[in-house]
Length: 255
Ligand code: SAM
Image (cartoon, rainbow, N blue to C red; front, side):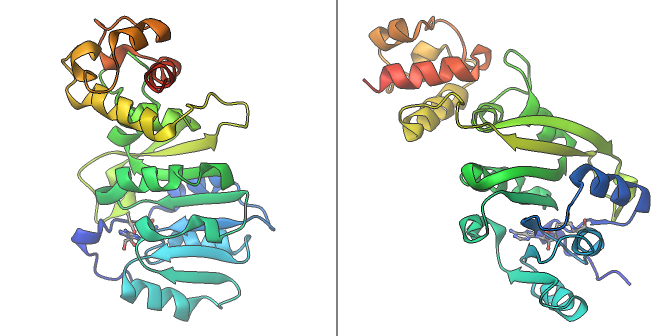
């Protein structure tokens, strides 16, 4: 029987076998892999993954669900980390880590930023998220969905929407459509800003007021000479810049 879902923890449990099978096929787990599942809940996905990957690490904030998982799976099959995934040190798990899960939608953006900080250690991520969030993650410059989340994640990952999942696949059904997204860290040769903190500041400021030109939005960070060095017209708006142009701007501002 399913435990009573707690709304404040974003608990919508996947109960549709067809979609569970498709998600497992998308993850394609293999014996010997290092894998962590975020938000295992009652364990529908956990059970399927732990049949192949040993040990499977899981991070669950709900004390009751964590206790139920410990009781259900032997400790050498599933290692239950009880706590907030936003505080969980992914660096404590082996390199080449695969990160998966049907994420709690109420903390999806901070969780994506948290995971992104460990990108160099990660092999890939396969997440279920609100479809609207996935649309923003994969959005191209110049589109309505393109924003800070798109730039900050595309800076580190190649991302693709794998397939959609309807509300009816969950108990209780969420109000929104969901989608599976695959995230693959870009390799060593990727474009990297000289100062990543500065890059983050420039991107945040550029999108803080979408209607403003870059000249106005970035007044405190980028002067005219830096715009010229980066080859970016200050009359443009942030939503039109590619990730490479943001990197050029941050590097030019950093001189
Ligand atoms: N994976 C399960 C499934 O598909 O049925 C549950 C998915 S449910 C959308 C999200 C799960 O994440 C819940 O079990 C919830 O308790 C857990 N959760 C919520 N916030 C969390 C956090 N900050 N850290 C870790 N787990 C969290």
